[in-house]
Image (cartoon, rainbow, N blue to C red; front, top):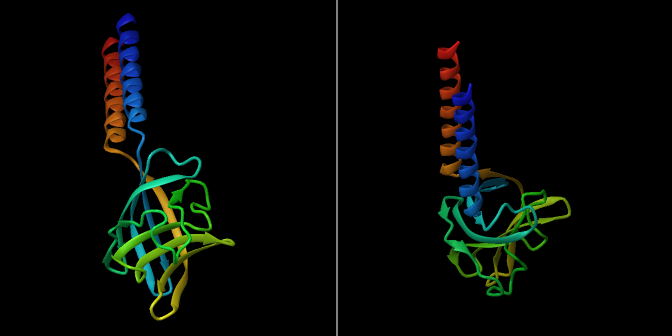
Length: 171
């Protein structure tokens, strides 16, 4: 009985160590996608934490209509858009300003993803032609588990299996 207790305690300690390791590395990766009339995009974005409150997006990757997303447009560098590059896990995920990402430079290559009056939008501006392409979109997002999360899950399952196996041999 005492060794069973020791095994259970060891499994709990290993789980706590995994949890502490995961908590020390707080960056969270989010898988996102959207579609609208003539536009589709998908990729990942990274925040410094769990985005329970709005926080800055550290990076973004993916593609939009087959074009590679090159990254976020730094704040205050494109006066043709209102954006804050903030994200939260709670819906709506963006402010009225939303985020601005680059697919090729200049205004035509900048895409503003934002939320306004109950709807998400994809906005592209051609300042030279004086045209804005604003498309209502269906947006979805989910957290991407880190590999360490899967490792902790596997370790926990191995520990439980070992305890159960030990218990069966003692009965």
